[in-house]
Image 1: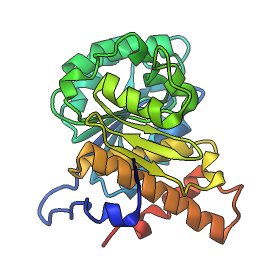
Image 2 (image 1 turned 90 degrees about the vertical axis):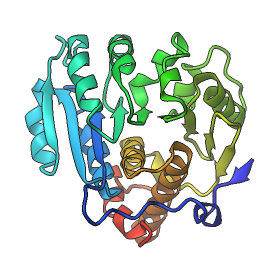
Image 3 (image 1 turned 90 degrees about the horizontal axis):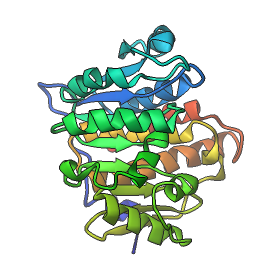
Image 4 (image 1 turned 135 degrees about the horizontal axis):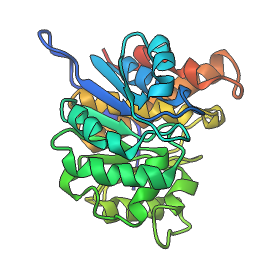
Amino acid sequence: MKDLTPRLLRAWPIPAPPSDAHHGRVLVVGGSDEMPGTVILAATAALRAGAGKVQIATTRGIAHVVGVAVPEARVFGLRETRTGSIAVSAGDDIAARANEADAVLIGPGMLDPAGVSSLLRRVLVQIEGPPIVLDAAALPHLLRHHDALASFQGRAVLTPHPGEIARMLPDPPEIPSEAARMAAERFGAVTLLKGPETFVAAPDGTLLRHKNGQPGLATSGSGDVLAGLLAGLLARGMEALHATAWAVHLHAEAGARLAESAAPLGFLARELLGEIPRLLPR
């Protein structure tokens, strides 16, 4: 196990943006009638990370709200269920848009794990090329479909907290670092296990530990910011492990700045967004 430090990150620099092309395209898939803010936070974080273009695929019922909140993004209103979630029948449309992106994030604000699982069965087999981040309600799908990410060949990232990883693994270890390592090996995906100590595990056995997170980062919506930040870095061309390590570092540093300027507790997830550009290497 290695500690995730600035010295380690210097060996994995964030690519400089090209002077004559876009900086990467991100597709964020998620949201529901009860949680429209999640995709707003995630999409904005992707832009703050340097992604050049962001598209948001969400339900028709909240698409106009999301579009006003993130005027920089293109927003697609998808068919939805009676409970206000994305319908399985929208899967083909999602996959087509995903294949035009440089990175895809699925999961923020989706509240029906069974429905999300059916949607993922339809979508994942059609995605060819872009790396993918699975977050929140997208994660339990993997318990019964452990090979769902095989075609991504290590270009997938999972972002569970301890409760979510317990719903992903058939017999999760109690030690967080071992749980992260098991998930990475089982699903062939980089696994970011959030907590008081954050662990990043890769399928090749690499295990990183980050010990400097702020208590205030446990606030609602913070995970959506982290997932969007990660997607933005992936869209800029970073490898999955390197992008995940940088996302953890930048997220923690943004929290540290707010803890110093405001208070250790009580800052909001949306306030993290303004700190990110100033933390990116120049």
